[in-house]
Length: 186
Image 1: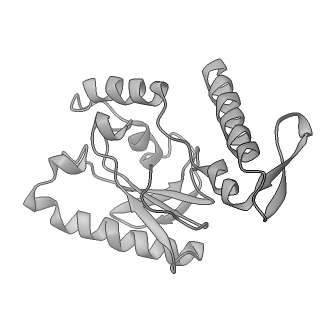
Image 2: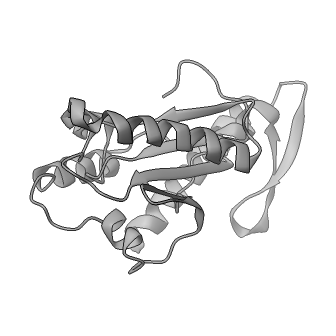
């Protein structure tokens, strides 16, 4: 819990520092931060409230998760599928389940996972036999985007392996949207 608090404080400091470095921009908005203080934040910095780059903690967690990736132990996603852990489900059918990310990186951030892992711990492990579920995951991304009102602009992300900061080894898609996306990401 203390680590999360430290991470939040660090993220808020970074966002605030970026915001104040751009104060000479013509368009600004007010946004409330820690301790209910009001800071003037440029419009282009509002997006950074939802975007956090990989930190050393995220990289370490990804590397630790990779060590046990193929051990067969249940992941947090297996527990969500089994309804052992509660989640805000956005969409569900016989093959997949989609739910809101608990640490959103965009105004809309939904994860889509196959209900049956079948060796798909990561996209790099996909085989020809997985073609149907991979297609269904992408089609579900379209359904989720439509339900969330972001069909005109959304991004689908799949993190693959520790170098991409994959921290749960159960293939999953991130559907992100609700704000202007920039390129290149990260």
